[in-house]
Length: 233
Image 1 (cartoon, helix red, strand yellow):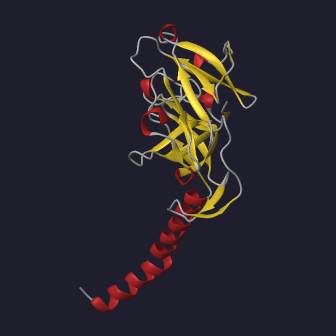
Image 2: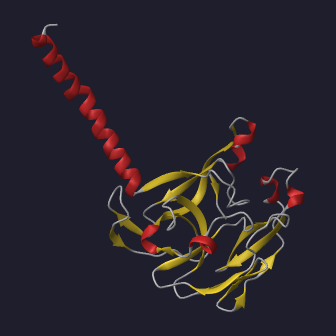
Image 3: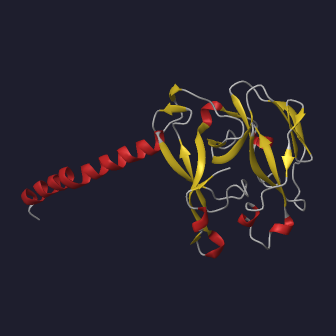
């Protein structure tokens, strides 16, 4: 091999192709880490709001600005509000999760047979809009109970599965300063703050407001077109 010819060619490849590509990848991933991203949802813990196979939009600038690839905060301009859906790292094992904010710092949270109480007062429930229930396959619908839960003036769907063994009563417990109590909308099948405790503020990645893409894993990842770019309750 003629090394005198190979070295200039390798240098040109590095300068003209590989280095620019690496810079683009680094900048793109840094922007996704600090500004906005999407999150694949592998479980049904947020059904019927979010289904398995949904990809949800994550606004990482909703509350603060972080150093890319870390949870270090450079600046903060807001905090999660009750009823918002957020992405965070579990305090138990660091797994990235999607849940709904139920309790704010200082709140007392209690569940009594799946009925939520905040600061000693029962949360209001109503019949769920029938347009939401079809998100669950028809064959599964009779297994579940559905309702609309009112938090901070906004309604969102919740689901229960009476046949499942679940922690339907919890607390009362007071949320520590700088922490947030998270619950899944699928109350009988969700690993949430009932099990790993309130989530520290610094572990919250951002707010999720919409389903960007959705694929049905039970039908060979067929697109669920009706859920694409759908606002989240």
